[in-house]
Image (cartoon, one colour):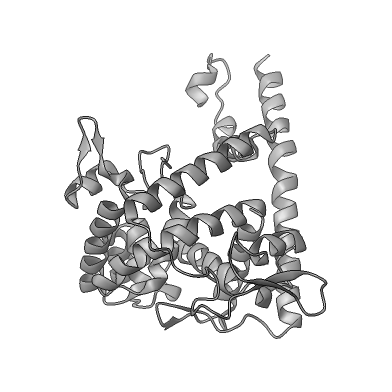
Length: 335
């Protein structure tokens, strides 16, 4: 019975996960080839710090992040809608603390700009702050109050934290990595490996890939046409179609697609800045994000939940190999 149970679970894992991984590998290889045929990646920077895409490992992670980000497809349009309200609210605060504007893309990687987002480990809000971190930064968490969901207060707190990280590290790319993985982790790896450049550091896999997720959103939302060789036509249409009330629709050369012309605005991605208060903007973003989530739930299969469960099965597989004969084991012990 135990052998049958294990066989069924292993077969389920292989059925769900392996085809997905194989498809991802094939897509990544195809995307890398497509970008190579057009001369490689364009010049990319984060906070004015150039990304060394001439390094093969860096270019591969960047392309991988672009492919994964583009796979969200219809969610990209929702992110653009929320960003149209979110960016004008946070940009003045970033400027107040002398923090580069590129950090406005960080909350997209953290929460998809969903105001009420909460992770399974307890991080919450646009900036996905942990309760202890939020309290250390002066936010109220508990007793019926949670200021992590307050856009204005949370952004002020995060900016103070980013200034502190920059004082300690002196490099904005490392600051973004420390925001995800912690200052202690980044410092210890720098000391152990004798490296000062983020792109030469070996960090936790999530932290090492984090900056590329931010860059992927930045590039897709500001320069989507440059990545047409690796972004699907479906995803591209969500990235270039005009937002409500913004710009004039013009045809994209050689494709038959149309995109919005933002000649009247300095930032060609988001159109004219809103003059609404941060509180009003928060309400608008929250309303949009909840409506979008409800719509996604009605669409059918909860794709993220299924794939999340499949990845858990993949990570727990080695425990099967340690199965001891003659000892009764229960499913909750394995979990």
